[in-house]
Length: 79
Image (cartoon, rainbow, N blue to C red; front, side, top):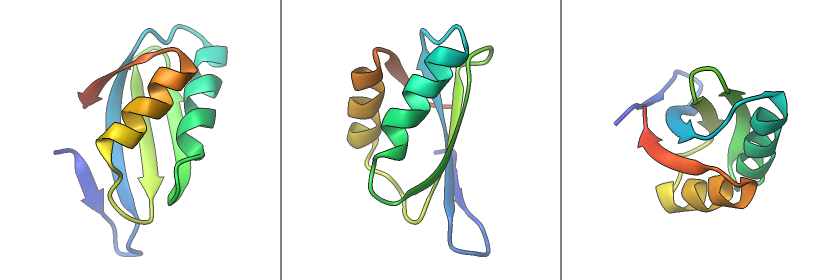
């Protein structure tokens, strides 16, 4: 598992998302994931397919998968 908790209590998890190819893709994925309760920041990078999510507690992977699906992409798992 690639989640880690920092000293402020935030949890950062890196996910691998397939199908992103541009800034619009990054925005779509970031927008959907940011709506999950507890998410404080999202950074998607189309060139690597990595989406870094910071949250107040560990996220349910199925909630992240549903958000990525809603954006039109596929969650490959945690990076």
